[in-house]
Length: 286
Image (cartoon, rainbow, N blue to C red):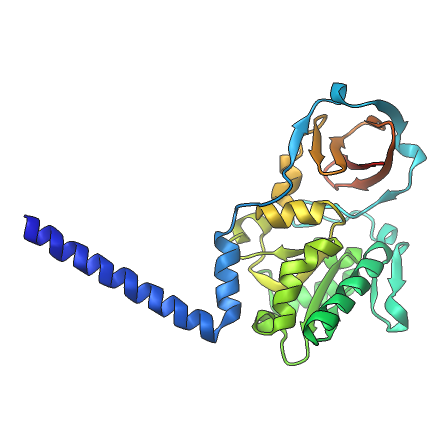
C-alpha cells in the first residue's frame, strides 16, 4: 500500500510539473492568455475596501434628486434591461476631438487622459474601432454577428455612447492583450473610470463572451470597485442594496428609488440612473 501511494504521489507530481511547465511556456508565448487566466482567477481586492456604514455616523442632509442633473454612468443595458428612449443618450454625445467618433461627453475627457497615459508609458497609440451606434446600426450588427457577440437593438451599451471597442495598430479584437499597450489598458482603465465590460468566465452573467477589447465608462470610484473585486457591472449593481450606505475612501454610495435621499452634509454629489427602477447616488466628501 505504501509503495502504491508513493507511485500515485510521483504521478501527481509529474502531472502538476508538466501542467506548470505548459502554462509557463504558453504564458511566455501568449501574454494575452496568461492575462486572461489571471483575470478569471482573480477575485481578491487589495487596498481600499467597500464598507457598509450607518447614516448616523455622518453629518447628513436631505436632497431632492429632481434638483440635480442625472447622468447615465451606471446605467445597466443588456437583454433584461433594454433602452427605452435612445434620444436621451443622444443629448449627451460629443464628437471626440473632431474625429467623428461619437461618445458620451462624460467619458470623453477621461478617455483622452487614459489614451495619453498609454502612449506616454508604452509608446502604443489607442484607437476606437466602434463607439456610439444607432438602433439601426446595432440591429444590423446583431444580424451579421449573432447574439453570442452582439446584443439585439435596444440591448447594447453602444447605443448609450458609454461603450468603446478599442484597438492598437496590429492588435485588435482578441489579440489586444498581446501588446504592452493592451495590457496597460486592462491594468489601468479603472483609474480613468472605465471597466473591461465582458471579462473572462462571466458569460453566464453578462450574456456575452469574453471581450478584452470592449470597455465601458462607469466613472469613479465605481470602476475601481468593480475591477478590483472581479465583479461585472451586473454583480456590482446587485451588491448595492436599496437604502443602504457604503463607504469607499472619500466616497459615500447609496442606491434609492425615491426622489429624496440623505447625503453627507459637505460633499459633491453625482446621480446616475441604473435602468432598474432606481438611482445610484455617489457623494464625494469634501
